[in-house]
Length: 346
Ligand SMILES: C[S@@+](CC[C@H](N)C(=O)[O-])C[C@H]1O[C@@H](n2cnc3c(N)ncnc32)[C@H](O)[C@@H]1O
Image 1 (spheres, rainbow, N blue to C red):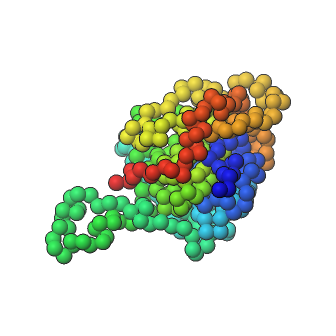
Image 2: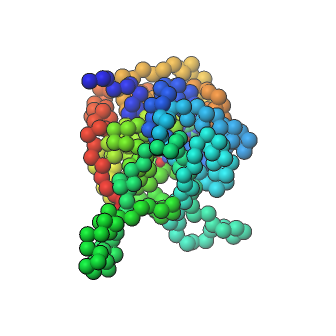
Image 3: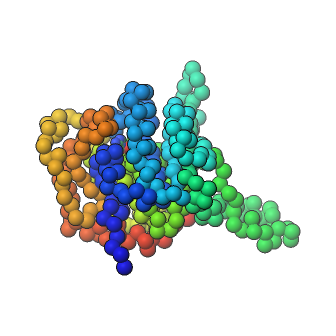
């Protein structure tokens, strides 16, 4: 049996633009990524606070580096908002075929909001493919009809109707509640995405045992979703505090990720620590690699790459957790192939 590639099932705590060099070309089935939207959020780095010109240039740069990693029949999903989705969709349309613009309705309750425009309550997701025979498993993401609908169709003419049994095709409007502070799935990341959405993308667009790559892992939702769906993952995250959250989420028992069961993974210190209060940390020539053999989340020095802005305020690199300290997590990360996907899109 061939040995598993060392980069599989790893989240590297480093600048994605530098880290992409680790990934062989044409090795990834799905790029599923949620980059900074450039709305001024504080991720402990300046990635969301760039000028428009810098942000678009940086976006084009990471797209250029990431796309060669995709297999020819692979796909890409990108989370954006209306502010920059027009420009970024145009960039991607020059290199791939756009299949959908998916609207994620965050189910924001009606309480006040904008007074000089309409309150924005959705994110915009682009779904792109490389060529016509792209992988897409519709049956894996059909939405079962509810009991009332089935009952209403119980007349003899509907008995055995395949469409009634298999459920309906998801539409391009996805109404899924955002993870408010009290949501059981919520970790301490300001823009964490719901597993329900990410798992739908993984099941539809990455074959079982395939590889999902996320350049901007945040709290690690893509890694968790891939693991729960029996897919491999690889990704990057610049902020060491968020890397610690990812490690914690990946170390939890598999079924702890179920939205209905998962306990909140909160690290109140994360936000504070994310602010670069100790510039001394930047000077540390310790920018050397912290070599770790088997951790799920690899903490390595944040290198200053072409993404200058993103690397302006890197969080201090903490001592890496050794494989010996995290044996269960390391083992689980290798067990990804055996994972039985849990259906949560009922
Ligand atoms: C929108 S958030 C991702 C949230 C994630 N989808 C989740 O569910 O938690 C974007 C993340 O990208 C990270 N980031 C920004 N620039 C980066 C870079 N150059 N390399 C790696 N990560 C970066 C930020 O620190 C932030 O956590």
